[in-house]
Length: 151
Image 1: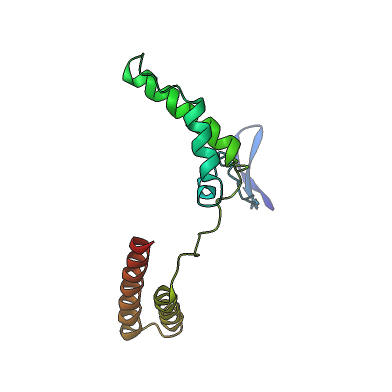
Image 2: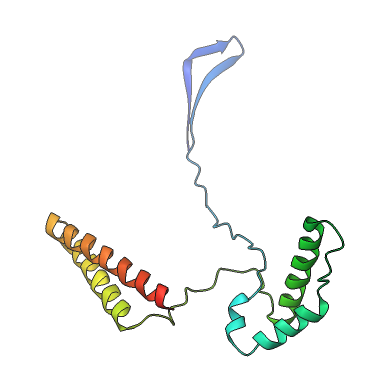
């Protein structure tokens, strides 16, 4: 911090002009977002399907005595309640890692080619590497789309 009083200058008769140069360092803290808890719907593909279906069928009020919106809200809240009990609920932390269990060999090969071409692009910033990366990226997207459609 530099502080300097200018001797001949006065703002008013009682005060001298003061020049102050201040540098303040701010430390930024990463803000942790608290995510909402989510129902673990991906557990339905395990052995929980039968239990889930049985409990929903027995606990839901399937009689349509009210108007459709009220009936829908009652059934939806019942399904969510049963799902929380049977499937469980996340703690609301960071989102889970992306599931790659459905990748087949074609997808793995396309992703590997795309990653290699990206590394090459970072090393050699030229038009040929960029075009090769764009083509590999497009092919990887097609492979992922086809694999997802099959799954």
